[in-house]
Length: 398
Ligand SMILES: *Cc1c(COP(=O)(O)O)cnc(C)c1O
Image (cartoon, rainbow, N blue to C red; front, side, top):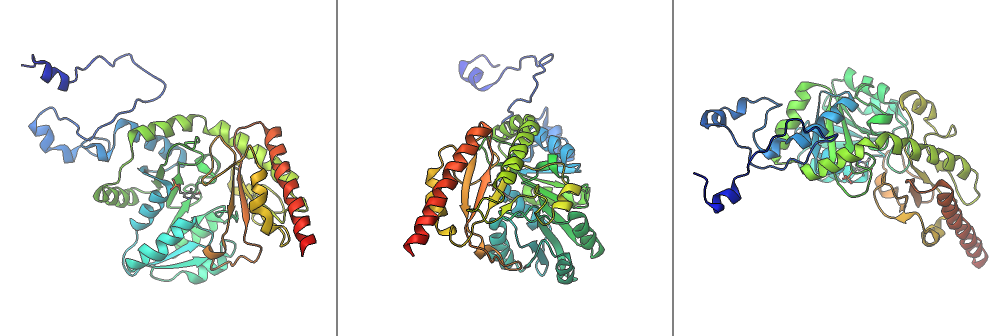
């Protein structure tokens, strides 16, 4: 039948794949999945969670990434989302109903705060924020309508460590779910589900993909009932992840362990050497014994990643933006966790309500990449020297 070139152009011959065992999985792109006959098509709904029916609900490429993450997170199941923030928003929305109360850590990733205060409020959900370092305060805020407690440890930008096992115990006592955005630690350095959390999200965009060229997020859950809620909702919303992007994340994941170990070690040495520098206020890095929460960090985390922050004294803070132009290796830009080291000046005052920020509101977030350690250090010194000079000149002008 298929003798016309026009038909041949459309039909794809199947070559043998037996014996072809590459190290990674190929990129399987599909919307349509063909069925062997009409009966198989009619029964496609019974193929179960491992079966394939339509590209939106998974391809071998996206399923492979989900499976790898499920193993690393010690989860029941993982779902991909098109970005880390999409994973956060979907993970929260899957479990919240009108009238529910939602507790969020005050140091939550700022777009998640905005999502709670705009969209979730519009849906009739009441968000409230708690101080990550005050579990008594968290306990007091739990009500009978509290459905979900949303955590992030260390906190975005200011790096406060939370006692996840203790928060999970409080949540479960009250019949509430506990979710953790685990982007900083990645599943290699912290396993929130093993510490009692019910849901964990990751911005795979950061360390897991690791090359600043892809956006993706994941939602992993501890229990099959929770998995069903997430699966059904993201299916209804039509959310899927691109197999091309999933394949990039799978490639990045293969080197995550080595990259993370290197970036964490360099960050530790830089954080120690920067402590006490007169132009710096505090070095916010959980690997420093002077950081509040360091003991919890040592107990729960297997290591640190390469992202940390610097605060500045009053007389120095106004000059930070200009000093950044003296960096040449560190790029200036948002996101982190890639091969290129990055610096980003952050202002957080407007995104804190339970634990108000009382220091100058310019915090410099650094992400250590894979460049030569000595050259990175020199680059930082150049910026700090400029900062000292600008601050001294600023003082003299007053
Ligand atoms: C970057 C980030 C996200 C969002 O990831 P995107 O893929 O950029 O949407 C979520 N949570 C945390 C803690 C992050 O740092």
